[in-house]
Image 1 (tube, rainbow, N blue to C red):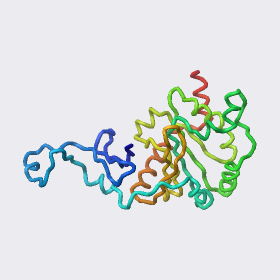
Image 2 (cartoon, rainbow, N blue to C red):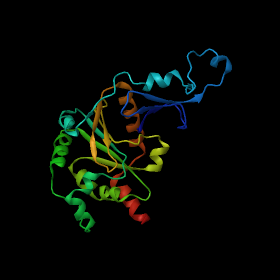
Image 3 (tube, rainbow, N blue to C red):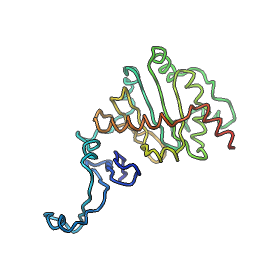
Length: 246
């Protein structure tokens, strides 16, 4: 079963760390193995398969889940959040491609060499234009490999249309994202309060979202947002950098 990074209090990204074992209600703990003989002799009811690790109390205070794990829900269940958010809808895109892009007619036009930056207004852009005109913010950071994957090149080519509608889109290299210990999963964060974390299959198809207002998970998402936004580059500037290296 896959692991989902929850959080760490390590500056170097090695340990201690908490992970969720997806599909279960279990948490995997990474830390330094306990070797003090005086401590080990005091442990009770120890199975031969068990081991023990040390972690700081602050890790549990900041990241240990305080509620039951949310259930996977259809993406359509959060459609109302894009209209009801009060100030900021923020997205992290960490994948190397999306099935929804590859199955779109725009993808075929892009493969044929057409300029897709000035596409006609569509429902998503209309959804963006109204709240941004009222002063709300749609923001996203897209992580890009070096060199970019085909899916990432498509998003770089199509970004100007979303930006024209009111989105602020920025890009960040995967190397830098890993240095910043950013999550390796996609999510939307609404008003620094509601987190919607995506689940994909191996073909990059969206299976649904896990929605939570758990303070620890929302805090981790806010920290990831702040780090990513600080280091990310505006989409037009990033695209120019990519073109200059080709």
